[in-house]
Length: 414
Image (cartoon, one colour):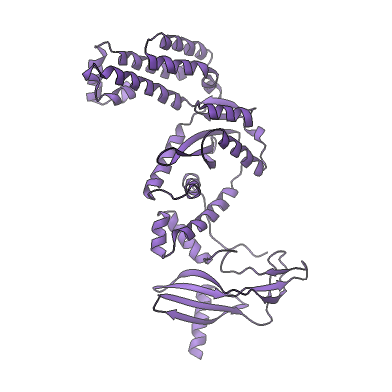
């Protein structure tokens, strides 16, 4: 009997089980490979009321079902704690309530120790790999991950958010997107929502209201020239000024240059396999690419003219803010007269959005750093071989990009 008492005491110490709880029994299921430890409380015990913190609430009755929590492995055995919950009648509340327990959070199927372990692993490994490592279904671990990421996000202070950047990242192959709303000053993802366009702006406005932040606090928005973003900002954040991201603008011009190249390559064989030469700036070309560019320049190609027009637009952001409007208008005139249809089309688009482009000279806002964020997200997605749901994907964005300081620890006693 003394040996059993010693074993019970050893388990209580290892599990950090405190009075009035104690270990009543344990069973080693060698067939299925599990150690089951059974807990109970002493007759006449009192508990802390989970609602008001009254420390001497007496046990009233027991919840019928036996509850089970996965714990850290003892030796090579997965370990499970079993207990029935008492309900207490609180004199202060005048209510009958189910008690909280010390070894696990409310509603969880894992102990604090187990959740701490899997969260530390999930910071370094894909969730499905962690699930294999600990012998649990990954859906259960995702629930743990969502809980702590949400806690981390709730702790973020939004009171000083004034300038945001908006961008999209693909969640899966095809046309499934997540829209990111990022604080440009802290480089923190504030919200990631499924879909794209104006609906995302409405979701962001609702999100701010839930956090007690007035939408009128947002003064500057940086985004691409998507009409859905423009109309969404106008409807939900009418006081905000839009700066069109210069990297999206230059990407659009690069695409126009490449369309000119592809069309001309049909009767100019020298243009084949030169795509990346025209996408780069001259100073970024390799020696071989520089020599090829010099050769092609002498051929008086349409692609060469398109390339020079592109380089000229890049110099817009080097201009004095007072001269920039005149420079942009002159560039648009040149591009429209170029007789290169893709360049003419993009020039008309730029002219129609000149106000938002020139806003950069006041706001100095770009989405350039979002490319780094997107690379981080896509690397995480490849590492995990994709995420089965948008919710999983969004939680991983928050945890990865925001570098959340997630701590798994029991709440302090009231």
